[in-house]
Image 1: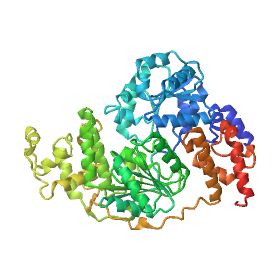
Image 2: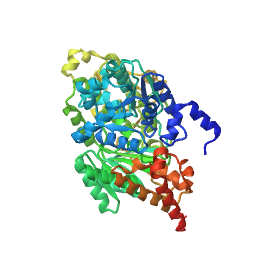
Image 3: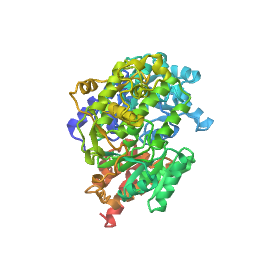
Image 4: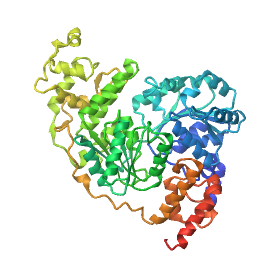
Length: 614
């Protein structure tokens, strides 16, 4: 039972009362309360929170405190449906209207919305930003608007989800409604973009940190990706992991390859039927030791705490995407790994994707710039965590938990070469990208060089001692190290940062990676743990609870984690509650789930104990 002081706090603070009564949590995670207080005070908020930090509660709790209708904008139909199912099981009146539901169901949902029954309505931007929907909503009591995965406004909007960019109209249509935009993956340029587009810069931005120190970071040169993947997975016997592949075909091939070699592996991609995707997702969420081989269609909204690793067989599209994808590992706080294979073919493929986009030239320049930054991260001789956090505006010390810290590749003093680059950038006005700077260094009399008379610069031809690839790698590493800054406006130019000026004066060292291809990690190949559950948890009881959860989920046609998260089942197995009062204290058990599931889980726990298994 709760102490009197805790009860008094809940009575004074309605958001805490909702958190406990509806969602079954005793306290907020870091940053959640600050975000909620700003919304409840009527202010717009941009919340940048690390993966697994509980972003959804940041708008779900205020929605219930405020009353009225909350509109949630979400990019994926599957994600919307899962969140609606989870809210309904928690006793919250939630609906979604989308193209995957038949017309009669959508009409019924709208009637519930119009009559005031629905508290949260999930819509894709394409559905929301129609004049008919906006006109209908304008007649209702809208109390809050939440834009999930808000980085899509910056990265997707101009490319292929133009309705995300159109969300900028919301503040004018609903001038007195607080808007919250949420994302885990926004660098400074993306944050500025969101602040400008969605909020006209009138917003309270809360950045709650990006570091996930329990995740080891490693990059390995791509040679034989199947064999490299198998070696890695075999170092994590009995552990769950996610393997990301670039294509649907490769996803199927990699899953089949792992299965052939004795690994329980499932595929997940948008080309599969919904039934097949849901079945594989349920298995991954419920069973131990399952490897999910997937395209980026998998993962958004998935909260499985015991994912031991994320393995990229192909390079992702940007550091933001990489950060979001590796953040699905280690949410239980245990040691986890993020391992990426990196090859020149990946770079060519990613360049082609960008060039083939139906997007304005400035958006393509920004995408190429983001890709260059990711390549710099892959090539860097610095601590990877320093580079990754530095990209998001955080300073960090060398982490001791990445390949460059643990098993350093040969490095060389690159101060002299770096100063050659810095001189060329300074002399050409800090306005041009890597390609033009390298043309100056190599003495290439291109049309662009001649048009700007850059052949007259003293730096023209100063880099003939090395080839283009060397200079390109060095420039990327200088960007990754914070010595050079890409143009934040996205025009492709490089500017010299303060660290770069210090390097130019000889006040700072610069070492570069001699071998671009990362060496195999020796020190990170120590044997993993046995895969046993955390101390004090009966593994057979936890397995029985997961089996029960899966059965209940199938009966309700929802993913397993919607019934209860793994965290809740682990807490249940630790506490072994014997009555409903004790069950109510389990983390993640709110009033509605207590009523619907309490007795059946209590019976399963009692049956397990009577069998003498405890």
